[in-house]
Amino acid sequence: MERRGAFDYILLETSGLADPGNIAPLFWVDDGLGSTIYLDGIVTLVDAKNIILSLEETPKEGSLLVSEEHHGPQVTIAHLQISHADVIVLNKGDTISAEDLQIVKDRVQGINSLATVHVTEYSRIPKLEGLVLDLHAYDGIGSLETSEKGHSHHDESISTLSIPVPVLTDTKLLMLDVWLRELLWECNLSLPSGLTIPISTPKPLIHRLKGRIRLDSGAVKMVQGVREVFEITDLDRGLDKGPKDTPETTKDDRGKLVLIGKGLAGLPWEASLRFSLGFSEQ
Image (cartoon, rainbow, N blue to C red; front, top):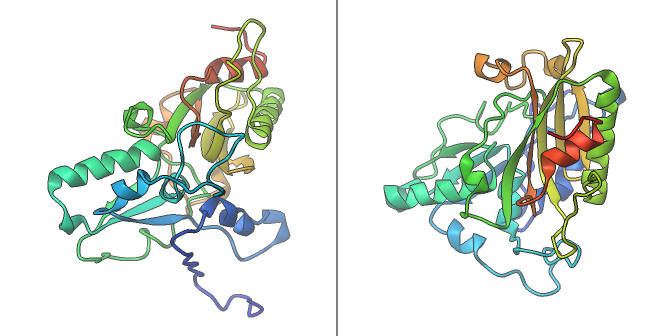
């Protein structure tokens, strides 16, 4: 690592039991530090033939996956690895029927609707660049369109949720930062008076966060987050490297936040955000 500039890529292959949420922040280096190493993206390899069994296994008592604070549907290692992914390689697609493969894809996208899914057969990958390398997943946003399966019955443990964000002033952008800190660090939602959440409701636990925020000045900000670590930066920070905006992603004047995590269903997300931003209730 002391040989600066000597590496084209560093591909970190973790064990099959690794939690990417604990590893990714280690490589999330502040631009101001001038490091040549940056987090390019998280790739999860999924065994299409056995993934359903992995998602439905019961975590052992005493496991780090069993949390008293974030009770509710149980989360497996497979859930964690899929929920954090920027790219999902669905391997062994040739070993199951087309119908079963669609069931697997629906289940995977029900957990993470933002990740790009590649189906491979006989373990063959057509190329590395753009598929598992040179992703620049944190240098841009691209499409924030989410599958409705993220809100379906396919998987109650972890799902994808989108929240519309009005055009903000610079002051309200700071208020958004406070709301995100409270959500990611404290797993808490601020609510207006008269609106409560039952005490038995599990606290939300965010695994992955993306967003596009539009300001009244015409500037556009992007939000990227993994677990407790997040940043709000100019959308053009990645120049030509990151995922691009398209006519479909720019036609809506509003911004959007997309959350992937546990315990998202049934909570008053938009009401909490609008209240924290100082907007009147709709």
